[in-house]
Image (cartoon, rainbow, N blue to C red; front, side, top):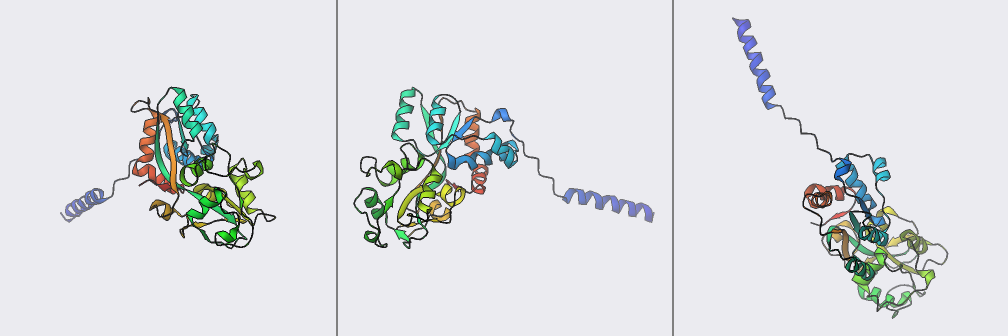
Length: 293
């Protein structure tokens, strides 16, 4: 009898343990590669696209690097309009890119998917810590040409720009100085690549008076040089926190651009829905981007 009671108790305890044990979380259903739209974009959004490939396709970082190919901002717009990709992650369209969109005869949606900021860089030897937004505008309008006019040492300001249709130049026109107000820069002060500008500002020989600009994600994480540093604007340093709460003066972001004719449930709309979901924003944040909400 004791053996029967003991066996019953053992079975009861086993059943209770099974009932109380946490259920294993269901495995995440990964997308098939055919469910993923063709992606292009700017240099600074390569890690975003790679993070999505890792998250949704289950790729390793190395596989994602081989899978994702971005052709820089302007070429991405061209590829989208020419039907060579389905969605692009880019800075806002320039005037020329808006014109290209209009002339294509297609309608496009432009949706911000993460935040970023337009940032200014100075040479590490430059002692200035902060520049006012008004002074930055005055420099690029050609009204102030010496650092001692904006709180720095007595030396000429070497004001670098970027070529038209580059993402950072479009942000300059949108957020700081319009294209018709900016002082034209010689070709020698308009480096073709984002990294080239940072290299010019960080140059030990002749770079001390340099001032340039970029986007926060690229300049603070993707292409960092000891000879250059980010400068505060109006006393506010660009950080993930100051971008998220909009306390930094020049905040914008990266946008998903795609054809408005994309049907509900298409790979493009599913990707954007995911990216704007809490899980998608966590994926973007884990890759170093600032979420939109």
